[in-house]
Length: 109
Image (cartoon, rainbow, N blue to C red; front, side, top):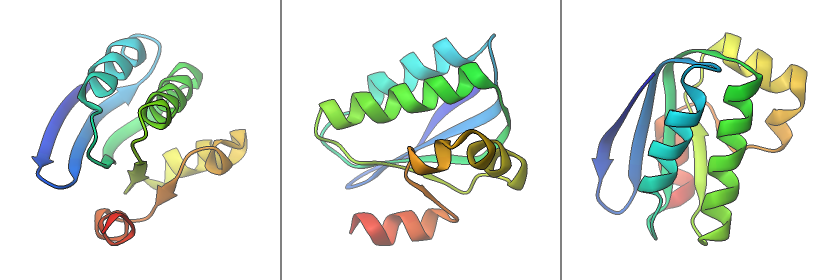
């Protein structure tokens, strides 16, 4: 799992690339959480190919960390398989998810 900052101006966009599983979820969670500041954040999931239960927990912890810091986080552009996991587990109701990066940007402006 690679974590990269795609943009950092008024809105920070952080991309997750690869599988968010037991081997990578703690590291990804820590890296993304360390990037949370006062700017709203979009977590780009378009290249995240798999999310395990530990990955779900990492995404939830990122959202909780952001909320505690008063920062809004939106998860965007997840592939259908990842959305299916969110829906089956009920995480779709716990995480703020939108279809595209552009949709997330509109919400944050």
